[in-house]
Length: 213
Image 1: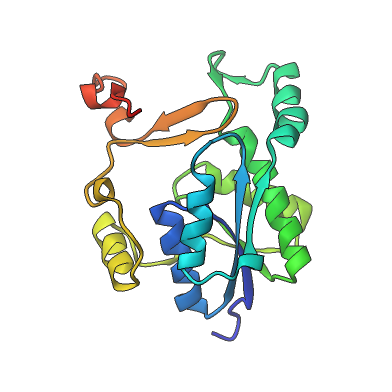
Image 2: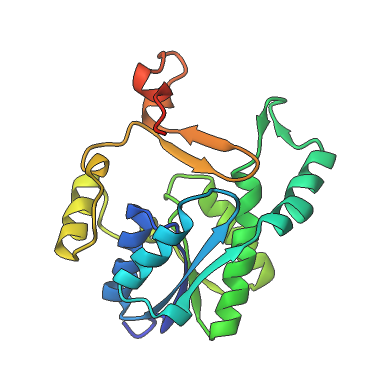
């Protein structure tokens, strides 16, 4: 592609979806990928993300895992509390308040590496795509944002699994079926959403409340 980016900074969790996005960026655009994983207090996911990126061919100097906990609390969480920003009087905005900080570092790393684009794994119908992209454009109006969920043809879990298998991306056993819901965690809270939790008229099953130690 004549307009293909040469270098992309990807917001990378180390999970299946962003690992597929990493490989898709390489195969679709033939570009160099830099990964960025923000430590916002989610715990044990960080080093596995580094190992996964290395396994997918990312050079160590292009893997960024940064401790942003203090900045997150000082510059985002505390101001949010002072503004009493609580959705419908009940819901702490723990997931959404983290997205501008992640975007800030994506844009800064793009400038540092001379990258011409940033990428995220927010779904095409989700609010997170707006949070990531408007934050990035506010900081650098010229930045290109790649949102694979709006571009690719991997529109089902089956196609994602097939792509992962074709490209030797490890798939956790519980990812081969439809996950019952997704969880986003940071210092402020955990947010569980989707699928089994989507319809408030339906009581969640027992599996929702099971915890692993």
